Length: 477
Image (cartoon, rainbow, N blue to C red):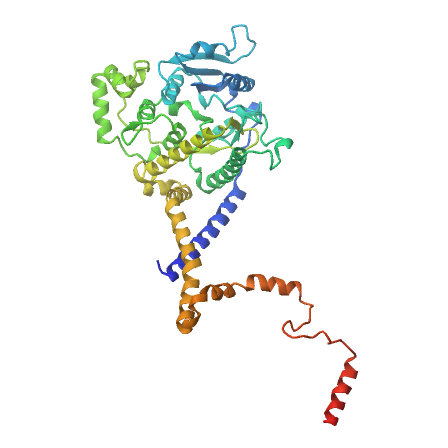
């Protein structure tokens, strides 16, 4: 890469970054949360909500605290879906028949751990008009969490709602910030600092993305996400594709929040059932039961979804929008892993995000259709996908500017003065000496000295006497 090209790339990246930051700041200022209507004017109440909670190998102390926080918000029902191996242990923490709570708590079990299959199991058993898919370590700090997250559904075309998530460590599990005694550089851990940084960046970008075009960066958080039941429970095609999404031939278990976001925002862009889906539907009509065992890979799954899917002849192409409720009441704290487990979390989030971006940009719906629906979100997805290339391009351009520019100047100097070649480094240093000398001169601006001459006898005197002495010496000469 030539030096002019490196300079042009650096200038271009800097100008784009400046534009992007200002645009993001402008969008953040225009974001407004959805207002919570008075109780007598609400279309949806907590009693209309069914919570679906998949749990695998959970920390039961944390789970018990989270369960209590959900019950405090008084949802219509809580459906916990565990594995058969852990169902008995989970049941010990569920309220008994004599519990005074109005919330109905149900425990379901599946044979093998699979988050998406567990979610489908709970979705099919739900009865509410709004479904809340909640992680087993997501604790609702406010009794108004559910009320705040329901507010966006007052708008008819809002199909999916998410809010801010705070990543907490077990060291300070009940506070959104480290307690005062941990706000000390000698005490705080790198994992806590990383969690705070992630939270601050994500929240600001969520506001900007939603204000820009109704999108998000780049999916709602799976810790707590609310959706209309008609999109999840009443749509057999959604359940089938949700359970059977594949990447590189492997069925996906994680990334449920990314799939939900993509489905709600862009599913309306599908014109018709593709040929492979029509063939699949025809096969299911012949033998839905056999297909259930083959496609989901587990006899424990409810076969009703395939019986419904066999009746699907066209897509529901209604356009739905996303609601992002960035309020304190809607904030959902969840636990951050410690040590190497945190690194594992980061890898999973990054991998899931990359799959989502590649799927949206290249396949469903594709960059052209996506841009028509959410231009800002599309640009940010493309930018984030190309980030590794752009970062290395920036680093290479910077190194070239820092090395090649001085080298070219020194080469010309050595060609002009060949005898100076052994001490080229002295020429390089003197080129940068002003970095220190200018500071020194500013600090000693009032000093008057020759530095290279002996002026010890020089004394400041009366200017008139000095003039007379000079004139007298001239006459004597």
